[in-house]
Length: 325
Image (cartoon, rainbow, N blue to C red):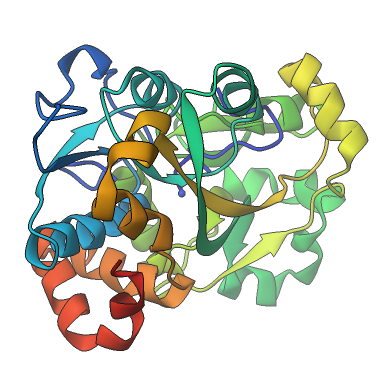
């Protein structure tokens, strides 16, 4: 939850792929973008797809409505978080539907080069943090204060954590602060990567099934909270001073992640020339509940993205009809 290079203090992968629902990262496909992107005279749209399932849910619904309500050809391209900004600036993709904050890229492309334009709020607030299962927090309430984490390191060891407590992350491509936090807060933990969002979910589900304790990097919105209740560990408060320090040196971060209003971004030329499609994407805004409903259908119920979008669209006309230009 995916995602988002983000600065060190505005990172996610913190919280979807075009073909899979795994990981917050993918191969850099900026050189393999859709041939329909920015094609003059074609009624087409190309959407960047991040590799966490919440982002995939956004793209699925946007794609379905663009095709079935507005008559567009829609192509999707899986691109990592930072390369997605490069692809958007170049016109290789027309829109990013969920961004968790990339100040460096915003300054370069939105403010300075003006090749990317803001697309408005997604309507969802994103938050990254460290979480433990509720059953463990209920048994050990003091684990929710980071200063007590070392007390539980032995209980949170794994074969991969080299004798330390395990802090479970998702994909190695996630841009996170976790290694810096472990070092700067003096924690007896090792960051261990599951490999992808899907692999991380599988590990959390298995641990919950066996009532085993875990400490994990996780994010909201995310449908897994419906199945595995988790409670956030309180890290040192996020401050602008910490943010500024992290922007200069990511290894210096020693505070919590910020809460972020997730935003959309459009290629600037597409904003001017994209007609109804551009206006529709700017109007697209829904709730955490809506996103989680579609994400859960894709990830847990194993529906195709198109089928999940179709079901949600059928059940929620009062939401999406307001987006139509």
